Image (cartoon, rainbow, N blue to C red):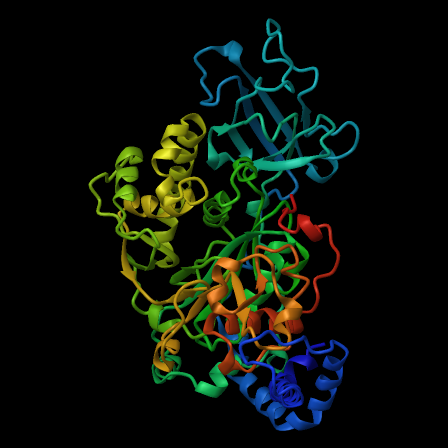
Length: 583
């Protein structure tokens, strides 16, 4: 229960006492050696005993939670709730299937045209007859064809050619239309159909993006979590206090993209918890998860979420989702971020620990900000741009990574080119391995989406001011002073370490990650399939844990205590399949 959260202050003191007691009993033990783990049966007793000792801390925590109370009430609305959808249960759509991936229409025998129309989509898209379904089995492009449409490499392209009453095409890998894998929208134009995932059928339904999406109710002021412990102890900066008192600053929306999986779920809880407890501007800051999924998942009931069906290529390259869902967000008229001036794009593993308003006020339309990317200054990135650029090829690249802090109008311009350049590069990668090998020094392949963003910004002509120090990676240098700690607003989490002589370190120790043993004993890693199930706790005192590890485990643990355990669900697969996404 969340009451456990409120007793954490006392736990640390009790753990120190226990550690000192153990050491006093065994004074011969070297401080550099690994101590035996504390008996796990003692931990519940320690938690129970601490309750009476931290009544004042609980009271203070409740008081501090009021600092966040107005954030949920006064932030601009996320979506246009007054939007009216015309013909909500009707559809009229015409699409074509092609033998070419470029949707070539020079030979009429190499494509087939299908029209589907209904005034009752909900009834006509189900059942054995299913008028809005089109199975490929038994169908051919022409009478002269030797192949049925469901055979491998027969259908290579798909395009919606008219959409009188907006529909979308859901693709299935079987002719019975039971195994969904992706969706196609009119604005995507020609879509390459790959041999994997296999496509053997289409179901037409009303365009999901046309409808206003439901947001969770605001969190009541008395239910909001308290500020993060370090903000209570160290205080909030004078700059943040001054900005909090102003009402003339731009509104900003913090967003990240993800799928629905066990891997993304624990990050979603901690990420949102970090936002709620980091003292963001009370009336200007908002938060939104951009989810790639066939439908809203169970976390959407308490985490603000925009959901968009996935593109086929995301099955082949999952980071594709970032650009794809962003494009669909701006294409969704009732859900685009018209109430916010600035969009702060982060990743699921960028967890916020301080107010970021002082960065937001530096951005404006035509002038974005971004953290210097790890490849900043690389000549290979410039060479890659020259090789794939379509427009503005002489543009001096701004080699930034997340967070991107950009005006919504600028992001709306960048998003389609962001996706376009990923498509261009991925097509080259798939067809020419020498192209991939040429740029392996900048992690071409997995990192293609990072280049897609900066190339998209260059194509759109949107400058990004390159800044340093917004976030700190888990394996980067540790802050050397309190002043340096206070300058870091986010962590890019990945792993966590505890001191080697902390008694519980041996209990949670990982056998993986020895390359980072200089930081201590690795006790947690997002790369491990136990990452969501085993959260190391109780933690050593703050002053004994390195900066990145402390904040990682603090947000991970308290986020779970606040939001609760992740129940068994169709949206998540357990154990070693923890990173498999829901359709």
